[in-house]
Length: 522
Image 1 (spheres, rainbow, N blue to C red):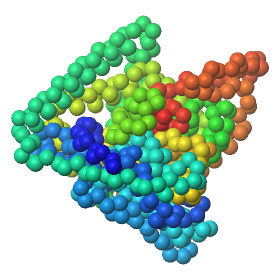
Image 2 (cartoon, one colour):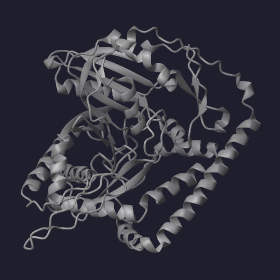
Image 3 (cartoon, one colour):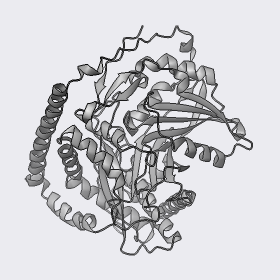
Image 4 (cartoon, helix red, strand yellow):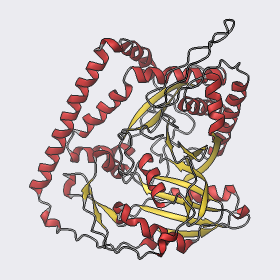
């Protein structure tokens, strides 16, 4: 018999996702996974049930403390029923991509019932070509993109064999929650003070470390880079056509690239995989703005990219361990090659000036405030629409497994990720690498961006444009850097055509990122 899962307090960031949520702002992360054949329902349920003991959080519900004196906690759901979390649906003929995208949009529009654990799975059949689909959702308070990917890898299999379901399932005993009276006012105030003091100490330590970094003689370019970037962050950002108040109803669409094509672009023109993705996204946004009759001359787009703070090698932690890095990119760069150079230059400067540390300090400062103030702050934010936006879009990228996964014996062919969006951010972009491909998911508010499929098409056009440009660039013989690998000696270039210097790997780049969940990620 499984031991009951111990209750645990949420972090400040986990709690923020609970406080922020409302029907106009469903805060779930998700993935639409395509399989070679329909996934058998009962066998799939048995597979999940056999692995639930590995993730006790899947049996827990969020519990809010009185007066928000402490952060919410996770407590066992004594009425847990797996059939309240796994559902099945069938598409009507012809079962095409547009129908699946429409169904995914409806599912992703929903807000979880907080009296139950915050996850669900929909098994879809009726797709043409005899394929199947699985739509997987978890609340952002339970996992970020990195831990969400690990959850997917936990509940799916590395081989077609799922004979483990024949083993006797483990019984779970829910932990009895203590009476509410035991949560005293004194205990709540004590916990709030303790959290605030710890966060304040972390803030002061981070401030001192950042000052040492900037003033260190070995980082003499940090202040120069910071001074060059500041004008792009202080100028007011204009709204893109989809930067409107959101209604709650969502549309979802997707596209994909071969990672080999992305690597070919890097070989020809330098930069990182993250740089390539950001360059294509910026070009697609410029096309979308022009489609709606807007000029892109002397105009920047501000994209916020979640960055993982997980220690290298940590793969089993739930919750959120991320910060957010804003990247300002020009929309009027002439041609795909110039756009890639502009992106690579900025991401390298962000690394050198310690931008992630600045953002991290702001997060620590906010975490040092008492929980009741944080609860009030996050609950109030969605009601405030500023005259000019602080940012235009969130774009996240999480690397996934390089080898196939299976559900009840069926091989997964694709996984299109979804990052939540709302407030006045009408579109969000998520990227996920899996088995040699990059999968893009675009989520959009149905009122703010009813034509989000056009933005999806512009992503494909912009990528084809960059790939064609890369094929015309003379090969310099210089290979892109590989993380954690000793670079081989490079051949000397011809004197008549010296290669351009390659930008260093930016701080926000890792195996496959937009700007990116580091630590495995983005």
